[in-house]
Length: 442
Ligand code: HSE
Image (cartoon, rainbow, N blue to C red; front, top):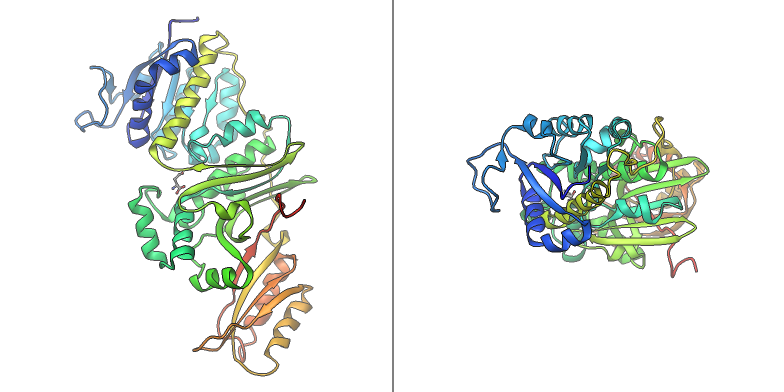
């Protein structure tokens, strides 16, 4: 039935929920004009009724009874802002099972249970909108699902985690040490509750899983995304990479899809200072998408924070409210195309990349030739080598390879580590992603 208003229930009133309700209240007239109907906030489900709230709500709207919210036949759209994969899964699945549309910002839930969620939504004719799950208010989900719907996505290079980008910016630009930079990131309120999820690349892997699943039209399980965090990246290498080769450090989320071959990986990488992604600093996010026929586009903005996420959630609600108010509710197509089969990315050892490497070695004749010999034996070609002046435990040999296979680079490093008479410690190895971008390839 087409009603006078579309009724929504919000589950979870943390910072995003509060930001959302403020947005709905402050922009009510604009939102009404855009939806064609009023949005009526019917209930807000919280854990405690006693907690002081930063928004003013109509009396009787707050409840702790999650089941009653789901069972309310008046509710058209359930907004899940609880997070995690426990209660949130019950809310999202419960809403879909009852034929209600869902808006969620929950990247972990989406990434872990993609096929199950969208199969259920399809069976029930319901929509799931999840713009806030990746890059918060930067509308990358809608761009992939709609703006680029006619394209084949060939690659996505993403700075998808604000915390690690903030930390790397502080280390690279200000010479700050890792721990102090992490403390500052925490103070800015952009970290996950457990910041290991940020610095170990888990958050970025979830986001890449979601973007990759949309691009592929099949689930890209987060566990199949190769993942390395930033905790092993040393300030010394960030400095050498900038001073010797003009590279910037990023935690990159990389998706590539060519000739049915899928690469999905999150790891620290150096990008040329002239690459558009190098200009993405502090807690900002960006994704550089190359697709056919559009070519390359980049989306950029604040990928974390309550207001940015609230903007995305409000847009998802409006999107669904338009469908409800125009009477197509119950026949909404899932926003993503998908097949039941999960995608299998190639193992990291088969990936090809350029590499930055640093070895601490004994400073004596013949060392360099033994190092280059090890790489030669594995078919890895060296593009440039430097020996910066250092004092202390030996000499630093810093080099960049031509594009090489990951497995071959690992084998060559293994050979070096066994040269105990000259190699003082395990090499530092960072992949280089030069990509193709305007100004470089044209
Ligand atoms: N911890 C995340 C980040 C928040 O730093 O990007 C947004 O998902």
